[in-house]
Length: 388
Image (cartoon, rainbow, N blue to C red; front, side, top):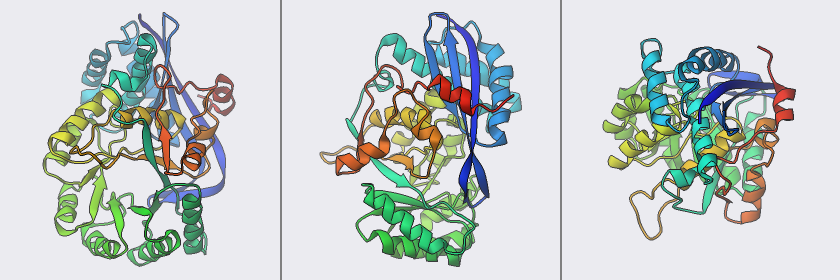
């Protein structure tokens, strides 16, 4: 079997209302889906992290930089392909967009392998440790509206009413306003729902530590990306200063990038983004390091149904840590804001929200189809395609 063609599908549409996080507001939703074709008629699908114009840049890297390197290679030689592409790009990008681009291709190769061997990808990863996965509902995005506290309270109540047993919110306006938002959400959801808070690296350590102390009083489960991803010393200082869990890692790349983050215990919870950090092949290496240091992993998930489906396999195959008769289960991050690329992209939808609602315990079933089970509808791809 040989790789014959790699196609980048950059999709985009206008949002009905603007959404945001600490770094920006946006009015379009964009995803980058990668299609890898073979001479045996097996097609693999993957996704590259990065919205907006980042997706357009990554499309060029996928099709004009990486594709010529690996055309004609056996798609089952995933490690060989990964290292060939990485080594040829190393002088020009050990992190960032080149690795995001390689991630989407690598994920598609795992999809091909699952289809070739007629098994779900989690079987290739060693099997499933669980047949259902808890889901936390992610919402409460920043908006430029006067009644943001009321909006956050309403959104969080709706997430709980939809069956989620845990939820995550955005912050990053100012310490005072952020704490008011967290108080409003905690009051809305009550004491029994787990609450996570994501700052998207809006703060310095000097600002974030006292914020963390206030979050401890509000029983926040983790403080996500409180400081810039480059600030390893700041992350370590927060872990040392607070009982509150510090989470991060979504903006890190490859096993080399994660090595010191893990070794120096800069986070209490590690959040690799498989569509950015090097794909499934590199994710496995990062997971092995995290397990060796007894650092829990809760995957970062953002994008389309392809990203969601990929993470269902990774979470199914994630070992219990440290192991017990009643272990804490890994959670799937699920964006509850409107997203046509999550709900309408696939031939056979994942129906995450519907499963959560019907489960009575906020969980979803693991996939059973060969590969990743995330084959997009060609008509949908064509309709939302961004021209080159």
